[in-house]
Structure formats: structure tokens, C-alpha cells
Image (cartoon, rainbow, N blue to C red; front, side):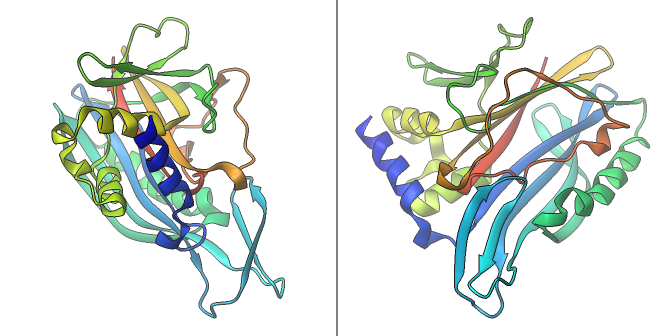
Length: 281
């Protein structure tokens, strides 16, 4: 526990390692299945502040729908996201690239509006695949980094050194999902702490446990694709002092025109990271 505390303290207090407002998200959005193989849109994005004149900044008001930044002269400094958007097909355990939509750089204020064309284009591309079945997002539990959240449970199998998340939605409590850290999450941690997180299995057992315990629940989503169920778990970490969003009390039933109209991911905690991983049931 001492090491976990040290890691947590270091990451939360390490603002010198980041630009103000910096954050990272690795988000996955199932669009459907083709020939029984999952089709997923991947967002790999960094949050940053565009401040060309290097003005003095004040932070206030917390994170609501976006991270807000103002200058002393009451002039807005734009918070933005940059990174890549890619469409993949999950073939076995391998992500096979279908389309690379290149680098993007978008305003946080216009996050959903800016991403909508990519999501629609990706769905159109997926619909061209043989026997494609579109995903329907049926349920979402929103924790917003609250460890007391009842939608998701983190489980440590200390004897076998395995780490799981379990949805607490009725009928799915037995379907434990093995936590799958994206490579970039491990690489960032490795760069910050000079520890070989990209070689996780070779690390000391307690260090692996400490690393798992630092992450907090963000959301759990359940999709139906034909007769198949897919769950997406989101974990995150960071400084909550600037974050005002609260966990929800009940599961959220989703009503969408189509799956391309579900866009999220920018509610990353201050100086934080969040990542998604999938479970096909």
C-alpha cells in the first residue's frame, strides 16, 4: 500500500510533467459486427491548451461539460484534443485496421460536433462489410471516478495475479472482464515513473497490484449486436479537485438514431487518463 500511495501521489502532483489541462483518452466505440467479428472505432487523443501568446491562466469552475480555462484579461484560451481516429475489426485477439482517418485537432467546446462526421463515415464504412449487424447501445452506468459507484466492481485475484472488472447490471454479475491496459497507457506510466510497465508481467507482484488499484471506475456500457452482447469498461485516474461531475443513481437507457450518434470521452479528469477495454459475451 505504501508503493500505491507513492505512485498515486506522484501522478496526481506531477503537473510539471504536463501542460495545464493535459489529459489522455483511449476510447473504443463498437459499431457492430461483420461475420461475427467486432468492428470498433478507436479514439487516441491528448487534451491540451492552445495558448499561442503564452498568457497567464486562471483555472476555475471545475470540469462540467468541458474543461474551462480563462486568461487574466478574460480572453478565452482554447482547450483542444489532438490525436488519431481509426476503424478496426477485432479478429480473434488482434485489431485489424480497416480505415485510418488520420490526425485530428479539434476544439473541446465542439467535441461532439467535430467528431460526428468521423463517426458517421466510420459507420458507413462498416455497413459495407459482409453481413454487417449494427450495434445497439442498451445500457450505461456512469461512475465519474467515484469508487463507491455500484455499476462496476473492480476485482483482484491476488492468488493468480489477475485483475477484473464486473458490471453490476442484473444478469451480468458473473461475467468478469479481464482488464486490458492499452499499450500507450503503459508507455505513459513507464515514461513518468521510469518503470517497465510495458513489460507488466515481469514486474513485482505488488507493483502490478498497486497499479491496478490506482484506477477508478468511469463508465460501463452494454451493447447488443444481433444475439451477441458486448460490454465496454472505462477506468481512469487523475486529480478530482477540478472535476464536478457526479455518479448517476440509475442505469441510463440510451435512445439513438443510430450508433454513430453516441460520442463521449472528453470528460477526462484533471491531469488524468482514461481508457476503454472490451468484453464480448
